[in-house]
Length: 77
Image (cartoon, rainbow, N blue to C red; front, side, top):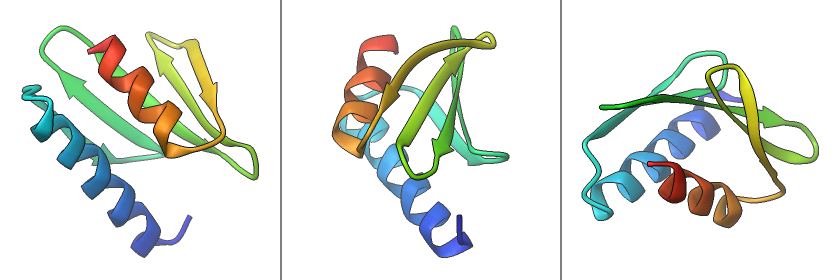
């Protein structure tokens, strides 16, 4: 994934967390890491299929697009 696209994804995820009032941060490191108070989620691009979401090394969900990814993120946090 290009750095430009990765930066956009970080901004989308950070913006969603801010809108939901979630005290969490996002970093780009071998995918995307969402650090929340009680957990850490890892989001990995699964080219060309979409996104994989992991918590504690366990696969939580796979999504074809950002809407499903954001829904899982909101539900888990």
